[in-house]
Structures are given as structure tokens and as C-alpha cells.
Amino acid sequence: MSAFLKLHPKDNVRVALRPVERGDRFETDEGPVTCLCAVGMAHKVAERLIEKGSLVIKYGMPIGTAITDIAAGEHVHVHNIESRYTPTYHHEDQAESSNE
Amino acid sequence: MNKTWQGYLRKDGRKGIRNAVAVAYLVECAHFVADKIVRPFDDEEVHLIGFPGCFPNAYAQTMMEKLCTHPNVGAVLLVSLGCESFNRRRLSEVIEASGRPVETLVIQRNGGTAATIKSGRDFVRAALEEIADVPKVEMGVSDLVVGTICGGSDGTSGISGNPAAGRAFDRLVAEGAACIFEETGELIGCEHLMAERAITPELGELIKQSVDKAAAYYAALGYGSFAAGNATGGLSTIEEKSLGAYVKSGEAPISGILKPGDTPPKGGLYLMDVVPDGPVRFGFPNIADNAEITEMIASGAHLTLFVTGRGSVVGSAIAPVIKICANPETYRSLEADMDVNAGAIVDGHMSIDGVADEIFELIQDVAGGETTKSEAIGHREFILTYKSFEPIGPACLPVT
Image (cartoon, rainbow over all chains, first blue to last red; front, side):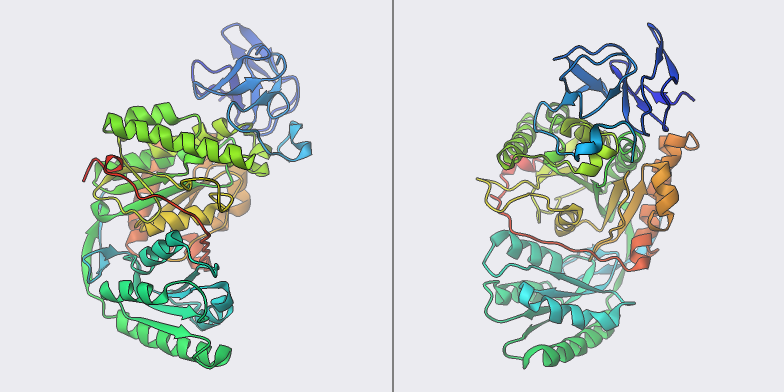
């Protein structure tokens, strides 16, 4: 079973089913994508380029807006996306990629 | 498969799955005394509940009335300091009218701490004996009210634990149970999906309005229903957390909106609106997970399904909590606190339906008297704070 779960056909992010390493790869319709950094379980990785200002899609639904260009294989999290409703409160160190 | 079990028949006709004595303090000043009263009864069904505020609050009054007359409660002891605003007489009358033994101790009139503790323990001892004779009645799934909540969520919650809880909910609803899901502030981003599931267009509109109200309320506070640990666990925004949480409602039509203390009129799926009405007056709507568990219990929940990814260890006073762990790593470290390992879905060892079956079976076993992990350990968390609500209108419950 791939470590990178695609929850819905419309999604532009994958969910890591277990901790993944930089250099781990997953297949997409546009060819293989290489993970650009280590990512913790249940964190998100971009499946393709997500341009600044465009929607991040998970469960087939928008979960926020990209605040920078996010390259395919990049960690998608509080450092590069924002809510369309209310700001997310997080600890300063949480833009990092691992679970801990 | 569907089981039947022996429940407790209350004089108001409702059926309970537990037979507890509730000891309720009516102001923080009486909390210590009430706590001392229950301590010797650690191994029995004697549960401490209460409201800390000194000043009157209609919501708190209603919540205490509903909790003290919950079908899992057999008898009640009220512990008052004496000068607080809480209307202890009215609460006592409501309990008495429900046919339950009730006594009120007023510390200021009862000789202070030691004397009140002694009188309280005497009452509890006698009440335990008295309620041992409550008539039994056959119960099945269709008699149950079940709540669901997720807490300590992470990115696994929405792909394992919540979908499994949702499918268990679908089965419960199909069998005639009433199921409650809640926290409109954690359904921000799902309002249009939910509205499409409402049994009437008017109810769909009200669902959207309840989520809009939550979004406005949180905007006024400056932050959402999102804790730091959610981000550590891979969640980035409130709407991402919402979509993951939303799947625990399953796929049944939504039959109505409840506010805390409103009981479902019949079987079906109900959304509980926990966000106060009117201007922001009393701070954060859901101060912690147990506040919402308490609210669902006040609406009649016999037990609660609690899905967690990061890990939570809480139970509740009055009604058992079944803990469903979404994250396999968390399950391995907190196994003694978890009833169901939905992390096996993430590991690829179990299907969502397999875990849903396990949850459906466990609900019936727990209703039949089997203790949950949190019950066996002795968890009986309880929290009740100030809020204000307008009564629901007829369009909220088109099923009646």
C-alpha cells in the first residue's frame, strides 16, 4: 500500500499514512513525484504545483488557500496555506515537517 | 447483530443503561464538600457534577435539571453553600417530579464542612440501597440516544476513526436510535453539504445559519475551535479539521437541530448547535471536550463515541464514553485508555466497515453493562460553564 493516500479524485494533496522521508516517491497521473522533505504521519504533501492564491483540495473540498506557490512534493501545512474562515492558532515551531 | 439487555425503567417512562447517584454542587464554594461526599464511593456509581458560578444563568439551570433527571441517574443529592443565586428549590422540584429520591444540603445551615460531608454520605448510602430496587426493562438499539465527538484530532481522525464512527452511526439510525453530532464551530466549511442532507429545506437553511453563527462568533473571539496539537498532528486549517470531523455524522438524513438540553423527539440523526446565541458574552463556546460531552448527555445521550487521533483519556460523569483511537501510533502508546483501535485502518489491517461493526457491537455491550476503559479506570470528568441560548423554533425539529 502506498504511503501517500489520495482521499478523493479532485484532491491536489496526498496524506502520509506513515512518516515519510525526503526522496520517497509516489505515482500520479502526471508521472512520479518526489517528496521534498520528511513529513510526519497524517501530514499533507502537494501532488502537483499549487499556485499562490489557489485552493488546496482534500476530501474533494477546499481546506484553505495557498499563501505561496507550493511545488509538487512539498509539505502542505500552516506555513504555506491559510484558512478561508478563521486564522489557525499553532505553536511557533509547527511549520516544521515532523510530528514531534 | 442486534442484542437486547436489561435497562433501568424510570418513573417518567425513560430507560437508562446505568443507575447512578448524582451529587451536584450548585456553586464552586460547595465543590470541595460535594467532592468529599463522593470519595468513599469511588467503586460505586456515585458521580460528581456541578455548576461553579455564583450568579444566575438560565442555561446552567436547564442543564442541571436535564442532567439530574437523565435516565442513567437514579437519585440526586444537591449541595448548596446557601447564598448562591442558583435556584436550588426549582431544581429539587423538577427532580422530585421525575420520581427520583432527592435531598438538598445547605452548608451554611447544616453546620459547615464536616457536618455536611457526614449528612451527604448518609444520604448517598441510603440512596444506593433504595435505587438498587429500580424496576428493570428490556432495551434494544432503538431505545438508545448516542452522541459523538472528536477531540485531540489529527490528520488520521478524518481517514479512520471518524468514518468508522459515521458508519456505526448509519447503522444505529437505521435501527431507530437517535444520534447526535455536534460543534457547529467544527463544521465550518461543511454547511452546504449538511444543508443538502436536511429533511426539509427550512431545516437546511437553519443548519447553514447555525454554522454562520459559529463562524461569526469565533471571528469575534479572534480564533477558531482549533488547538495547537491539531496542527502538530497535520491539520492546517479549521475547514480541514471540519471536513475530517464531519464524516463522523455518517450519511443519514439530518432530522433536526438541537440546542443543549433539547431531547431528540424520535430516532434519527440530529445536529447539536453548541454555540451561544446573541453577542459574545461568556467567552469560548466549547472550553474543552467534556463541555460538549456534558451537553449531549443533557440532551439524553446514554453514551458517547469519542474519536481521537492525538489521544485523550477522558470519560464522563452520568454516561459512559467509548474511546475510538484513529492513530495507530497513539493506540500503541495509550492502549489501556482506548476501547477501539481504528488506527488499524491506517495500518491497512482493518476496513472502515470492520471497525464500524466493532463499534456497533461495543455500543450494545456497553449499554448492557460492560464497562468502557474510562469507566473501569474511574474517569468521571464533568464541566459546565456560563452560556446563553434562545429556544429552538419548530423548523428545527420538523420530525415531531
